[in-house]
Length: 389
Image (cartoon, rainbow, N blue to C red; front, side, top):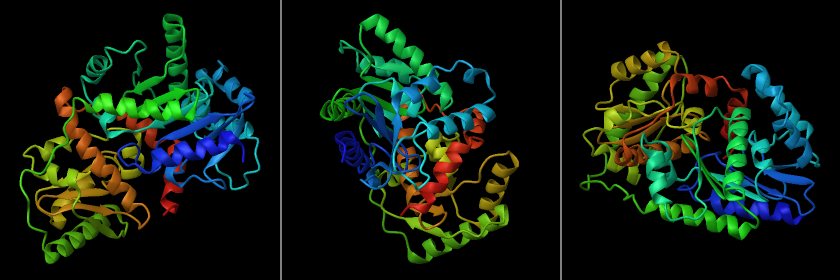
């Protein structure tokens, strides 16, 4: 096996198994070969923890990928035309024996102009800042003693425009500091680290986590609650299942996820409903979980149906996750999708609680949600993730 591929699998598995660093099928990694001709990168929709020698990656010709980001004509195209064209060009840049139809990450062109090893994650402690109104100012305080501070990347639509924005910011950084950035923190998105070796990249991840954690304290439940009664759980499942069917005409199984620390702490808050009233925090929450979980003071069919119908009538996706006061988290989704949605929801409520410390929650705008909802690449990776166990 090529050393670059072996390194890619290693850094992907190490970071991907930690749900405080990445959730569901999010995040990506890449490694460039020693001769500088190729780049191995995670395949779209693959969970980092599931990557192995046989699957979960593609190899691309580096010059072909760089030519995409240098193509000025692409920026002039309508997103509906541009983004599929970028996907096609990335597929044409692939040079490997993969026959599964796996796509290289839609952020491949972004990885191409960074250092040899790139790790992109969605750490919870970083999300506390990137999803907060005063996040940038707080990040600057956290990294104030660093000789080479991170780049803060204002939100851009994922895909080509994000790559273009980062390309400009990296160029400006090089002029100022004489080197490329090692750390980039993306508003409403996550963390990029880039380095010359796998070990250096992993050390950077640990360093950023340590620095960002210094201002945060994990919320804990205010008191220990007795276990939910089995009859109440069954009734809640039935009510949610019936409401989803009535509001969306879809018959979905409902799963219950008890004893999640962040959910238990969240349910104890008086402002729980208010914190969930904001839209999705980031693309992953919108793609995998249909947006924010629904807060339910009581779990009756009429209330849930009314709330779901209201979302649909507004052109939004119906909630897939439901937090029922005193009971916990319920998810209406297929067997393979439900654990991913639960994982993302558990992280989302923690991020929302953290963000209050930094000026309040900064969620995706309506325009940003519409772009993600209409982006074929996001639909593609959600479809792939739903097939994985």
